[in-house]
Image (cartoon, rainbow, N blue to C red; front, side):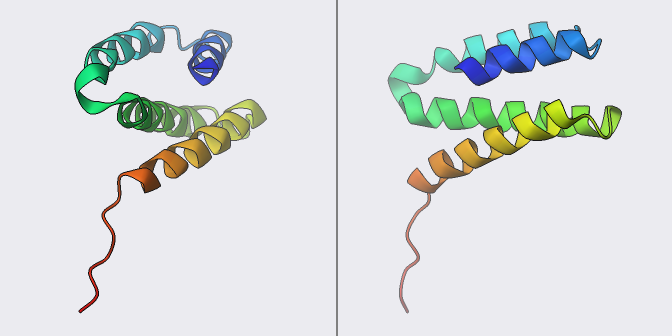
Length: 92
């Protein structure tokens, strides 16, 4: 995912290098589940994690357009993948 590389680069530029090992660790752990859960499910989980990090970065670095722009892209993609796993509403 190129979004993760952008996130890591953004973390370095913002002086948040401590987040990079956490991102890599989370991605590694979830990639192990890919064969059982499926790629889209794992990608949705990873994007949700990235969305949480970007939300925190937005609070720490208010007004940084790079954070806002990447957060918007990640949120949109995560919502698209999330829709694949929602159960349809049961008509009563």
